[in-house]
Image 1 (cartoon, rainbow, N blue to C red):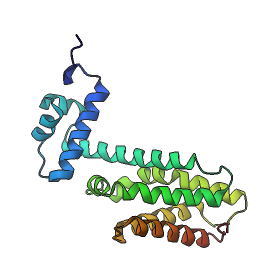
Image 2: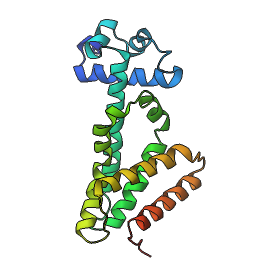
Image 3: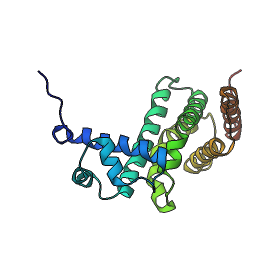
Image 4: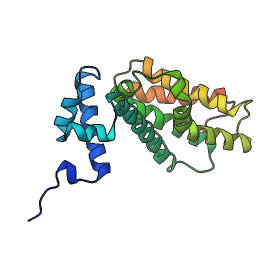
Length: 199
């Protein structure tokens, strides 16, 4: 007979993951401030001691959820880019825009949770992770003569923030509205770069 592992005998990464999943569910349901550590460990089936073995506080756990969110966003966009034409930089830019909009659209509640206490001083390294694929697309497109911009890093930042702000503030509901916004952003950013979409 196979005996199920208790939380204490499970691998360390599994226990940490279970704590993150339990906390995320409770934070989304009740809010960060209204969720005590006791509720998190109860949902995860662990002791309070195990919680503090992995995290010194709820704030540190929230930071871990933020890091996880950023990595998952990066991985989702990168996965989409793997399906895009490797040397068609306009198509790759359009793919990045669409994949980024969809990734944020599908995780808006979690995004708002993990960035609720975010400070500007913490943002630079995280921005580099999420804009890295965009920066590479712009750099390679520049080398190929598809567009010419004075500052690739600044351009990546402007495109990322424009996409992010549109998702945050447009208040869209239907799939058709989201698809239209993707189209509009692709048209806007490609034109901003002085490039042309294929007919």
